[in-house]
Length: 359
Ligand SMILES: NC(=O)c1ccc[n+]([C@@H]2O[C@H](COP(=O)([O-])OP(=O)(O)OC[C@H]3O[C@@H](n4cnc5c(N)ncnc54)[C@H](O)[C@@H]3O)[C@@H](O)[C@H]2O)c1
View 1 (cartoon, helix red, strand yellow):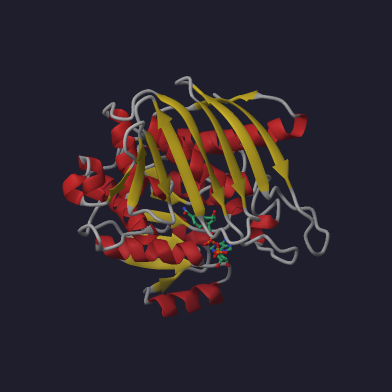
View 2 (spheres, rainbow, N blue to C red):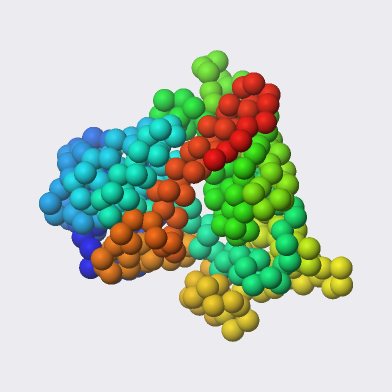
């Protein structure tokens, strides 16, 4: 079992810890923002070692796989150190806060031949995988339209804040880099289409203290390489919406709609009868059934997605790595670098009010 260590023990670091433990791999250590906090976290979480720094953790001889769960601005530096030390790396999104760094990291991961993964974990919802299978096997028909939104409310009030709001710790984009990237990774994965052109409008609300903040809202129009068009709203100021990632893919035969907050079913619309397809492994496509680890009617969710993602990543590590990015089942640094490029196109489009091509 690969010896694993986790840099950053905030909300998502603990989710990674739980997911790694579910694979049976040993978590040998954690790091935090200070040595004292790392000790506290190690004790609270039952982890043997508290590293004095994340730099020490990601280069340690005691570690095979590092999980980078720090604020965004530390990702690039820690991931590069880890790759150069020969580690397999799971790095949180956004992979970096600039596309030059993201492309360089993806290239370095390929050159090193290690596993380099980024948790765009919504791909691991069985009913999202079912939507993908229905596009791939032709049941949906040619995809003509993608639309939807990703809405949260935790920054709705003027006094709401977090390190993510700061353009240094969070990066120049917030709403899009933080959650819009999840929507696009998921919908590109489901449809097999890639966004080739976009135009975006951003909105930033006044926050207490009057400090400059990054965007709270992005409204987008997109065109894909498969000839589809799309419209998407991304917001972190939508009261009552906690983590509402919703998409619809309209094919020539059926429409498929998925709601991350109600992930046990998939809406299948048609000119005849509409169906709410339920997560029952006996009825699902093989990939969706593989992810469906308990029988229908026993609700699965976000933590199960994370566990499945980490299971796939650690399996690749145990089997000798993916040698780079040859079609592994999990989202890679290449996928994440693409989302950073998309993020930059969004900001550039909003800045000069134009359409931008995305490579
Ligand atoms: N994939 C997902 O679904 C998902 C969900 C949530 C967060 N994230 C990503 O995970 C990262 C962390 O987010 P979070 O919600 O856990 O934030 P958080 O604020 O809950 O936790 C971040 C932790 O990192 C610590 N930290 C700061 N500098 C550090 C350093 N140099 N080394 C180690 N620890 C350090 C902070 O003290 C804090 O405890 C972000 O990049 C975020 O975008 C991804």
